Length: 302
Image (cartoon, rainbow, N blue to C red; front, side, top):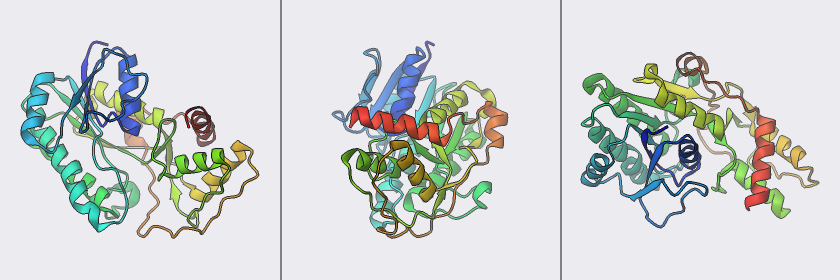
Protein backbone atom coordinates (compact mmCIF):
# COMPACT_ATOMS: atom_id res chain seq x y z
CA UNK A 1 0.00 0.00 0.00
CA UNK A 2 1.42 3.34 -1.08
CA UNK A 3 4.79 2.04 -2.29
CA UNK A 4 6.01 3.23 -5.66
CA UNK A 5 6.74 0.26 -7.94
CA UNK A 6 8.02 0.01 -11.48
CA UNK A 7 7.11 -3.03 -13.58
CA UNK A 8 9.00 -3.53 -16.82
CA UNK A 9 7.38 -5.95 -19.24
CA UNK A 10 3.88 -5.18 -17.94
CA UNK A 11 2.43 -5.86 -21.39
CA UNK A 12 3.69 -9.43 -21.11
CA UNK A 13 2.24 -12.52 -19.47
CA UNK A 14 3.79 -12.56 -15.98
CA UNK A 15 4.42 -8.81 -15.88
CA UNK A 16 0.79 -8.06 -16.67
CA UNK A 17 -0.51 -10.29 -13.88
CA UNK A 18 2.04 -8.81 -11.48
CA UNK A 19 1.06 -5.22 -12.34
CA UNK A 20 -2.59 -6.08 -11.69
CA UNK A 21 -1.74 -7.64 -8.33
CA UNK A 22 0.34 -4.66 -7.21
CA UNK A 23 -2.35 -2.25 -8.38
CA UNK A 24 -4.93 -4.16 -6.38
CA UNK A 25 -2.70 -4.01 -3.30
CA UNK A 26 -2.71 -0.21 -3.45
CA UNK A 27 0.78 0.38 -4.82
CA UNK A 28 1.55 3.31 -7.10
CA UNK A 29 2.23 1.29 -10.24
CA UNK A 30 4.43 2.55 -13.06
CA UNK A 31 4.90 0.43 -16.18
CA UNK A 32 7.42 0.60 -19.01
CA UNK A 33 6.83 -0.50 -22.57
CA UNK A 34 9.16 -0.06 -25.53
CA UNK A 35 6.18 0.63 -27.76
CA UNK A 36 3.72 3.27 -26.47
CA UNK A 37 0.81 1.72 -28.36
CA UNK A 38 1.27 -1.81 -27.04
CA UNK A 39 -1.61 -3.43 -25.22
CA UNK A 40 -1.70 -2.86 -21.48
CA UNK A 41 -3.19 -5.55 -19.28
CA UNK A 42 -6.96 -4.97 -19.01
CA UNK A 43 -8.13 -4.15 -15.50
CA UNK A 44 -5.20 -1.94 -14.50
CA UNK A 45 -6.65 1.09 -12.75
CA UNK A 46 -6.50 4.62 -14.12
CA UNK A 47 -4.07 5.62 -11.38
CA UNK A 48 -1.37 3.38 -12.91
CA UNK A 49 1.19 5.44 -14.84
CA UNK A 50 2.51 4.16 -18.13
CA UNK A 51 5.86 5.15 -19.66
CA UNK A 52 7.34 4.48 -23.09
CA UNK A 53 11.08 3.77 -22.94
CA UNK A 54 13.71 1.51 -24.44
CA UNK A 55 15.82 0.02 -21.64
CA UNK A 56 18.59 -0.69 -24.15
CA UNK A 57 19.23 3.07 -24.18
CA UNK A 58 21.33 4.00 -21.15
CA UNK A 59 20.40 7.68 -21.00
CA UNK A 60 16.68 7.05 -21.42
CA UNK A 61 16.75 4.40 -18.69
CA UNK A 62 18.56 6.70 -16.26
CA UNK A 63 16.27 9.65 -16.92
CA UNK A 64 13.18 7.53 -16.34
CA UNK A 65 14.42 5.96 -13.11
CA UNK A 66 15.41 9.34 -11.71
CA UNK A 67 11.98 10.69 -12.63
CA UNK A 68 10.02 7.82 -11.05
CA UNK A 69 12.36 7.09 -8.11
CA UNK A 70 10.66 3.76 -7.39
CA UNK A 71 10.86 1.84 -4.13
CA UNK A 72 10.88 -1.45 -6.03
CA UNK A 73 11.71 -2.35 -9.64
CA UNK A 74 10.26 -5.59 -10.99
CA UNK A 75 12.20 -6.30 -14.18
CA UNK A 76 10.42 -8.72 -16.51
CA UNK A 77 10.95 -7.00 -19.87
CA UNK A 78 13.03 -8.66 -22.56
CA UNK A 79 13.13 -10.84 -25.62
CA UNK A 80 11.27 -13.98 -24.54
CA UNK A 81 11.98 -16.66 -27.13
CA UNK A 82 13.68 -19.91 -26.24
CA UNK A 83 14.21 -21.06 -29.84
CA UNK A 84 17.63 -22.40 -30.84
CA UNK A 85 18.01 -19.75 -33.52
CA UNK A 86 21.17 -17.88 -34.50
CA UNK A 87 19.08 -14.82 -35.36
CA UNK A 88 18.11 -14.50 -31.69
CA UNK A 89 21.66 -14.03 -30.39
CA UNK A 90 21.85 -10.25 -30.85
CA UNK A 91 18.21 -9.40 -29.97
CA UNK A 92 18.39 -11.36 -26.70
CA UNK A 93 21.84 -9.94 -25.90
CA UNK A 94 20.60 -6.38 -26.34
CA UNK A 95 17.21 -6.73 -24.67
CA UNK A 96 17.92 -9.21 -21.89
CA UNK A 97 21.49 -8.38 -20.93
CA UNK A 98 22.17 -4.78 -21.95
CA UNK A 99 18.72 -3.68 -20.76
CA UNK A 100 19.24 -5.37 -17.39
CA UNK A 101 22.72 -3.91 -16.89
CA UNK A 102 21.43 -0.43 -17.74
CA UNK A 103 18.66 -0.85 -15.20
CA UNK A 104 21.00 -2.13 -12.47
CA UNK A 105 23.51 0.65 -13.15
CA UNK A 106 20.98 3.41 -12.63
CA UNK A 107 19.21 1.62 -9.77
CA UNK A 108 22.54 1.53 -7.92
CA UNK A 109 22.50 5.34 -7.82
CA UNK A 110 19.06 5.47 -6.15
CA UNK A 111 19.13 4.99 -2.41
CA UNK A 112 17.11 2.05 -1.10
CA UNK A 113 15.58 0.82 -4.35
CA UNK A 114 14.90 -2.93 -4.45
CA UNK A 115 15.30 -4.79 -7.75
CA UNK A 116 13.59 -8.10 -8.53
CA UNK A 117 14.73 -9.77 -11.76
CA UNK A 118 13.02 -12.54 -13.67
CA UNK A 119 15.59 -15.19 -14.57
CA UNK A 120 15.18 -18.52 -16.33
CA UNK A 121 15.08 -22.12 -15.12
CA UNK A 122 17.29 -22.94 -18.13
CA UNK A 123 20.23 -21.16 -16.51
CA UNK A 124 22.81 -23.53 -14.97
CA UNK A 125 21.50 -24.38 -11.49
CA UNK A 126 21.98 -27.08 -8.86
CA UNK A 127 18.51 -28.42 -9.71
CA UNK A 128 19.51 -29.09 -13.34
CA UNK A 129 23.04 -30.25 -12.42
CA UNK A 130 24.52 -27.03 -13.85
CA UNK A 131 23.33 -27.94 -17.34
CA UNK A 132 24.65 -25.31 -19.81
CA UNK A 133 22.18 -22.81 -21.31
CA UNK A 134 20.48 -24.42 -24.34
CA UNK A 135 19.43 -21.20 -26.11
CA UNK A 136 20.49 -17.58 -26.69
CA UNK A 137 17.66 -16.56 -24.35
CA UNK A 138 18.90 -18.76 -21.51
CA UNK A 139 22.49 -17.63 -22.06
CA UNK A 140 21.57 -13.97 -21.65
CA UNK A 141 19.50 -14.71 -18.56
CA UNK A 142 22.46 -16.53 -17.02
CA UNK A 143 24.74 -13.58 -17.79
CA UNK A 144 22.17 -11.16 -16.34
CA UNK A 145 22.08 -13.19 -13.12
CA UNK A 146 25.85 -12.95 -12.92
CA UNK A 147 25.70 -9.17 -13.28
CA UNK A 148 22.95 -8.97 -10.65
CA UNK A 149 25.17 -10.82 -8.17
CA UNK A 150 28.08 -8.55 -9.08
CA UNK A 151 26.01 -5.42 -8.40
CA UNK A 152 24.97 -6.86 -5.05
CA UNK A 153 28.51 -7.83 -4.00
CA UNK A 154 30.35 -4.71 -5.16
CA UNK A 155 27.80 -1.93 -4.86
CA UNK A 156 25.28 -3.28 -2.39
CA UNK A 157 22.27 -3.22 -4.72
CA UNK A 158 19.49 -5.24 -3.01
CA UNK A 159 18.67 -7.38 -6.02
CA UNK A 160 16.91 -10.73 -6.11
CA UNK A 161 16.69 -13.11 -9.07
CA UNK A 162 13.68 -15.42 -9.34
CA UNK A 163 13.91 -18.30 -11.79
CA UNK A 164 10.41 -19.55 -12.68
CA UNK A 165 10.03 -22.94 -14.29
CA UNK A 166 7.28 -23.54 -16.90
CA UNK A 167 4.72 -20.81 -16.19
CA UNK A 168 1.16 -21.16 -17.50
CA UNK A 169 -2.24 -19.71 -16.74
CA UNK A 170 -4.81 -17.06 -17.66
CA UNK A 171 -3.60 -14.16 -19.75
CA UNK A 172 -0.88 -15.99 -21.70
CA UNK A 173 -1.51 -14.89 -25.29
CA UNK A 174 1.54 -16.34 -27.03
CA UNK A 175 0.06 -19.17 -29.07
CA UNK A 176 3.56 -20.58 -29.64
CA UNK A 177 3.50 -21.77 -26.02
CA UNK A 178 2.01 -25.18 -25.32
CA UNK A 179 -0.96 -24.38 -23.07
CA UNK A 180 -2.32 -21.43 -25.13
CA UNK A 181 -1.85 -23.44 -28.31
CA UNK A 182 -3.73 -26.41 -26.87
CA UNK A 183 -6.53 -24.33 -25.37
CA UNK A 184 -7.15 -22.36 -28.54
CA UNK A 185 -6.99 -25.49 -30.70
CA UNK A 186 -9.58 -27.20 -28.50
CA UNK A 187 -11.89 -24.21 -28.55
CA UNK A 188 -11.66 -24.07 -32.37
CA UNK A 189 -12.29 -27.79 -32.66
CA UNK A 190 -8.84 -28.48 -34.12
CA UNK A 191 -6.49 -31.36 -33.35
CA UNK A 192 -3.12 -29.87 -32.31
CA UNK A 193 0.12 -31.09 -33.88
CA UNK A 194 2.71 -31.74 -31.17
CA UNK A 195 6.17 -33.12 -30.47
CA UNK A 196 6.62 -36.63 -29.10
CA UNK A 197 5.45 -35.32 -25.72
CA UNK A 198 8.37 -36.91 -23.90
CA UNK A 199 9.75 -33.66 -22.49
CA UNK A 200 9.09 -33.24 -18.77
CA UNK A 201 8.45 -29.84 -17.22
CA UNK A 202 7.76 -28.29 -13.82
CA UNK A 203 4.47 -26.49 -14.47
CA UNK A 204 3.79 -23.55 -12.16
CA UNK A 205 0.64 -21.43 -12.16
CA UNK A 206 1.13 -17.76 -12.98
CA UNK A 207 -0.57 -16.39 -9.85
CA UNK A 208 1.71 -18.52 -7.68
CA UNK A 209 4.67 -16.96 -9.50
CA UNK A 210 3.26 -13.48 -8.89
CA UNK A 211 3.05 -14.34 -5.17
CA UNK A 212 6.77 -15.11 -5.21
CA UNK A 213 7.63 -11.76 -6.82
CA UNK A 214 5.60 -9.84 -4.25
CA UNK A 215 7.19 -11.74 -1.37
CA UNK A 216 10.67 -11.13 -2.77
CA UNK A 217 10.00 -7.39 -2.66
CA UNK A 218 8.75 -7.56 0.92
CA UNK A 219 11.42 -9.86 2.38
CA UNK A 220 14.75 -8.30 3.35
CA UNK A 221 16.44 -11.72 3.40
CA UNK A 222 15.77 -12.05 -0.34
CA UNK A 223 18.41 -9.43 -1.23
CA UNK A 224 21.33 -11.07 -3.02
CA UNK A 225 19.49 -14.37 -3.47
CA UNK A 226 18.85 -16.40 -6.62
CA UNK A 227 15.76 -18.56 -6.10
CA UNK A 228 13.93 -21.19 -8.11
CA UNK A 229 10.17 -20.70 -8.40
CA UNK A 230 8.34 -23.91 -9.23
CA UNK A 231 6.54 -26.90 -7.78
CA UNK A 232 9.37 -29.42 -7.79
CA UNK A 233 7.11 -31.85 -9.69
CA UNK A 234 7.92 -32.95 -13.24
CA UNK A 235 5.07 -33.80 -15.61
CA UNK A 236 5.60 -34.81 -19.22
CA UNK A 237 4.09 -32.85 -22.07
CA UNK A 238 2.09 -35.94 -23.02
CA UNK A 239 0.60 -36.22 -19.53
CA UNK A 240 -0.16 -32.50 -19.48
CA UNK A 241 -1.87 -32.65 -22.88
CA UNK A 242 -3.93 -35.69 -21.88
CA UNK A 243 -5.00 -33.96 -18.67
CA UNK A 244 -6.13 -30.83 -20.50
CA UNK A 245 -8.03 -32.92 -23.05
CA UNK A 246 -9.82 -34.80 -20.24
CA UNK A 247 -10.75 -31.51 -18.56
CA UNK A 248 -12.20 -30.16 -21.80
CA UNK A 249 -14.28 -33.27 -22.41
CA UNK A 250 -13.37 -33.19 -26.10
CA UNK A 251 -13.46 -36.12 -28.49
CA UNK A 252 -10.49 -34.65 -30.39
CA UNK A 253 -7.11 -36.37 -30.18
CA UNK A 254 -3.65 -34.76 -30.08
CA UNK A 255 -1.27 -35.58 -32.95
CA UNK A 256 1.91 -36.49 -31.08
CA UNK A 257 5.04 -36.66 -33.24
CA UNK A 258 3.76 -34.16 -35.83
CA UNK A 259 6.49 -31.69 -34.80
CA UNK A 260 10.15 -32.46 -34.15
CA UNK A 261 11.40 -32.36 -30.56
CA UNK A 262 13.48 -29.29 -29.73
CA UNK A 263 17.21 -30.06 -29.36
CA UNK A 264 19.03 -29.79 -26.03
CA UNK A 265 15.83 -29.80 -23.97
CA UNK A 266 16.57 -30.78 -20.37
CA UNK A 267 13.92 -31.45 -17.74
CA UNK A 268 13.90 -28.29 -15.62
CA UNK A 269 12.57 -28.71 -12.10
CA UNK A 270 12.76 -26.30 -9.19
CA UNK A 271 14.65 -26.71 -5.96
CA UNK A 272 11.76 -25.51 -3.81
CA UNK A 273 13.61 -25.41 -0.48
CA UNK A 274 15.33 -21.99 -0.71
CA UNK A 275 12.18 -20.10 -1.77
CA UNK A 276 10.23 -21.77 1.04
CA UNK A 277 12.90 -20.91 3.61
CA UNK A 278 13.66 -17.34 2.51
CA UNK A 279 10.32 -16.15 1.13
CA UNK A 280 7.91 -18.46 2.92
CA UNK A 281 6.61 -19.31 -0.55
CA UNK A 282 5.34 -22.47 -2.14
CA UNK A 283 3.08 -23.15 -5.11
CA UNK A 284 -0.51 -23.78 -4.04
CA UNK A 285 -2.39 -24.31 -7.34
CA UNK A 286 -2.12 -27.86 -8.62
CA UNK A 287 -1.78 -28.63 -12.31
CA UNK A 288 -5.31 -29.94 -12.84
CA UNK A 289 -6.94 -26.98 -11.09
CA UNK A 290 -4.63 -24.55 -12.88
CA UNK A 291 -5.50 -26.02 -16.27
CA UNK A 292 -9.22 -25.82 -15.47
CA UNK A 293 -8.92 -22.13 -14.63
CA UNK A 294 -6.80 -21.50 -17.70
CA UNK A 295 -9.14 -23.24 -20.13
CA UNK A 296 -12.09 -21.31 -18.66
CA UNK A 297 -10.20 -18.03 -19.20
CA UNK A 298 -9.53 -18.81 -22.87
CA UNK A 299 -13.17 -19.79 -23.38
CA UNK A 300 -14.17 -16.34 -22.09
CA UNK A 301 -11.44 -14.24 -23.74
CA UNK A 302 -10.60 -15.91 -27.09
